[in-house]
Length: 440
Image (cartoon, rainbow, N blue to C red; front, side, top):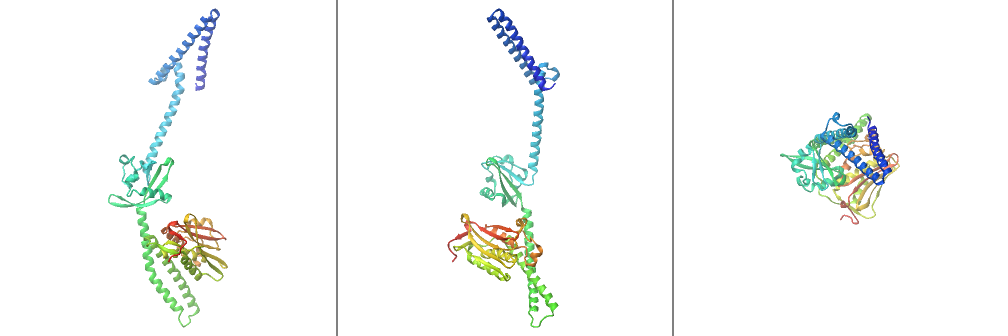
């Protein structure tokens, strides 16, 4: 029998009982109103007592868990839908319990350490990987401030300020030092997740790669210099060379020059990646612009105009002169390579908002499609490999620019569209940009 049918049947029982009480009271009222009211009161009391007795019977049988066949018909009528609902909720609770166990198992099997932090910075929960990397125990350290167990208490603020980029630091563990990347993931109500990733092996491989590139580049520099010197000597000889031989030597010379440029860029990139920056000094912005413009004019074809857009007021950048000249020079040379004549390249500087400042290079060249912009700073990435090779590019210029920007706390912005030219901007923070006075 369905639940709706049982409820309708129970309502019929109740209405019949009330109808019987009303009938007896009406018959008594025919003889005497007081007697009728008395009978009505007695009848209602009797009906209430019946309901209470049935409720007590149902409740007692429900609490004792009596078998279904031992229940009275009316108790069975009430308890069957309740027990059906109880079974549904039990299944839901059991499913939730199994899901919780699976989530806890997955949490502990994550290859990345995860620490769940409360709004006040105390540890709510951490997985096994976090215990291993940070040398913590959930039973001993749960509920305590995480900052107390980091190598430096200030790390927590630095991790929070680093955002999605994360913060990489050295974490001691059982006689060894790990290089861990820690990332702050904010949650609701001020809580957060701290992700801890072991980058020791990756950094070791990256260091091996840098050392290999630097060593190979050093080994190639001397033979390339010798080859280029002998070829230039042969081309500059007083006795003219036969036309076929002269053409071959010119090709060898061009490739030797290209290889030398590639080796120099590799060495520059290895130095930027593997060494600490020298002490920073204030560098005059006007001198940087003039140096980059002179480099660009030296390779610009006829009909291509290279201009300098000086800021209204003299300014200076706190940094390393050679690195800043390399970055701005690479941007200027790229603009010249990819701007056909007649065209225009502008190298300039300007103040930005919040006390920041920018160095920029703008051209009227071929432009870059949007899908290529995110990968432009990758090593050896070229939008058009054949065109880049013909124009003498090595594929490392923007990678060098990006590393120089990182060492100077600057950001590289690229605005470009096919056929409309490009603008590359290096934006420096207010602490590294000074306006209104030249460097003496």
